[in-house]
Length: 461
Image (cartoon, rainbow, N blue to C red; front, side, top):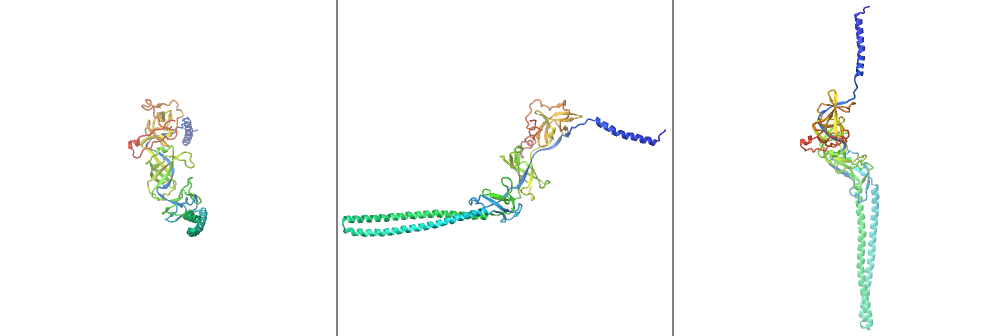
């Protein structure tokens, strides 16, 4: 039976369609699977950047402080009763904060009581001195009269027997000596009274001065702005801001600051591993957590020489100050920043990801695509950052390198660099498999040749 032509065409098309998936599946099963991930060697500007979080603050600011003489008033700890909200714009003389007066009021009552007691002692000393000196003067008057009597008696005894005359002369001499001694005693009592008056009077003056200081300190418990500006709270030793309820001590009476917003800087703390890469003058790119799209430029102005232990930090850190180059009215003290400090830069550098470079002892190498195969290529490394490492020799732009060793890496040909076996390799720092090697900072005013020179590469630990 002869089939129609249309039926033959349908049968052939069905067979072809059924055969394609089968052939594709068979071909897929026969194709070897590979897990190799490669990347191209790149060429371009290479930078070593240290990024740390920081906080904005004004370069210049006016301190808003409590009473300056609180130590003299023995007010060593003062509590903030109320304070205007942070960010409030105030004018000179406006109220900023009030301190709790309960402790100083008790101190004033104590000083006032001491002054009252000193006044009473002064008055008592004056009465005692008046009474004692009055008695002494009366006694001297009596002695003067007695001396006059003895003088008359001595004159009358001129016509008496010699023994009588002698007795009268002795009596007159005794009266005269007694009067002279009384005058000396009176002078001494007068000096004693004056000394007592000075002693009690000085105590009165001391208590009076202390009361004056306490009153002045109490007036200073109403804290007013010394100049116009925006109120920014200051931080305590533990990093918390001073607000209502916080303590202000006599040695650091600052309650808030009024910053000059025309010049800002960011304070960041760099760990001891990265701080040796940073030096004054390094360029910095600053971003704000409040506005990640905004990028500001700056430069390092100071690097602390001594590390410190910050709260909630295990390692020692060093304070680094970065001056913001631009003036921006939206910047506010206390804003959190991310400071990317450029510690090293190389133009037109050849570099690969850190994962692509491995080490055999002190010899760094990569697995490089060579046609349809893979070869182990020795390389000379240079500067590195958190993601990539500079290749001085061994690779060119566009080469394909593996990011992990191939499954069958035994027997792969190793291509050595010219002259690498003739002299020992220089120690180049940390392993490329570990943390980035420390990079020596390059001064911003160094010659171009110096800036372009690669730094020590990382090799195996």
